Image 1 (cartoon, rainbow, N blue to C red):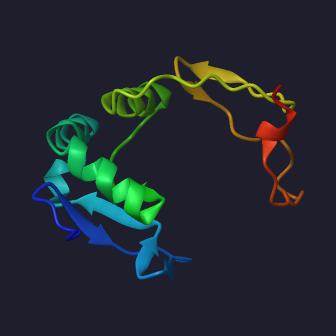
Image 2: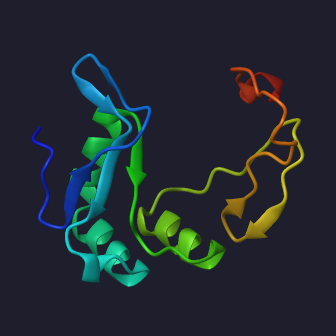
Image 3: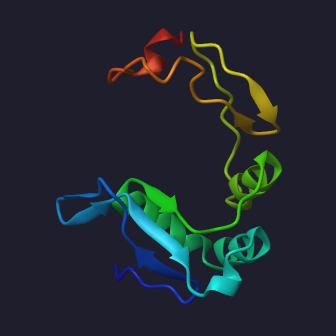
Amino acid sequence: MEISCKDFKVGRCEGQKVVDGETIPLVLQPLQPNKSDTKSLLSALMQNKDWFEQVLKRNSAVLLRGFDVKNAEDFNDIIEAFGWDEMRYTGAVVRTHVYKRVWTANEGPLSEVIHFHHEMVVVS
């Protein structure tokens, strides 16, 4: 599948890797500077939903960079644009609910290393 879409351009970020010929994460940016607002991003995601989901599956991770997402409400709207079922967090780590589907990821001090792990092992 070609990585091109009329509403996004492919960018780069530090730490990107190529694994089995696929770039991880794939960086998607606004096609034009005046299309970086949240409303334009939501429109682009909804108009290209199937394409975006194929890219996400193939590249394992997508980084939306350069969009003017201001707050948790904007981020939640982006999450909900995909139409995916909500998967509530269940695990041993305390997370703070921010807004609707937005939760904190880690509240530990930045000086602490988080080693690779999988929290789902604690779910019965």
